[in-house]
Image (cartoon, rainbow, N blue to C red; front, side, top):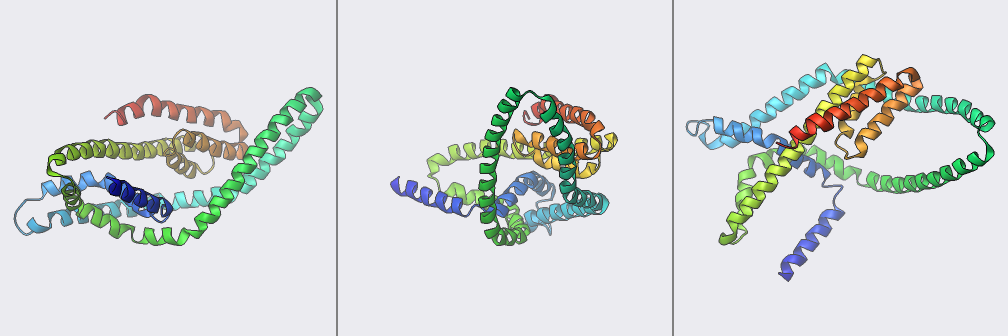
Length: 296
């Protein structure tokens, strides 16, 4: 027991220190969770005889690969250029948007200096100083983290390059890997271990697929809504909303702040429709999508 605990501690320590380099492999596991039901289903549809008898699993993985690549290519060729263009414009325009807001804030700052009583200004400025100290500390921490991230960038890029090969073998040898894992346990425990793994796998797999589905739906609805309202870079803002949907709690708030920055700098009259849209999307998610997606 002590040897097992010590080995687990060492493995945990190694994985924690190599977490940045292992990110592509974790990403591959997430993608495998999404694609594994499709591969298993397709494998059952292939006859257990004939020329494909010994390569059913490999053939199923290759078919899923080909279909996935085809869908990705079609998406890149149709909406990819527009998303890339709008995302580039959004990134390049953020400094201009921020400068516009600063100019607007100068006007309101003058009004603040002229109209707000002195005792109220003292209370407000003391609170702002505390918030500024907190933000400064967070920025410093973020810069230190960024330096470490840049150092590990080469490892991440290398991992992304081998991601397709890693994903292929994860899907192809999933059953062999499961058999090897169960063989490590005593015979009298294998049934219980199998049941626990099956429960965890079912819950975790459904959660990951559900979160990805929510991200796609929220991003699509938000992008369409921004386009209807007439906000600049609606596709890019939709992508931001979909990606940040994967961030618990703070994700929707951050996506709203990004949209609010664009709207306030380009057409402030649309800030209320944008706020209503974001509120409605969250209500749609919380009252309709989440109970049904996470409850299945």
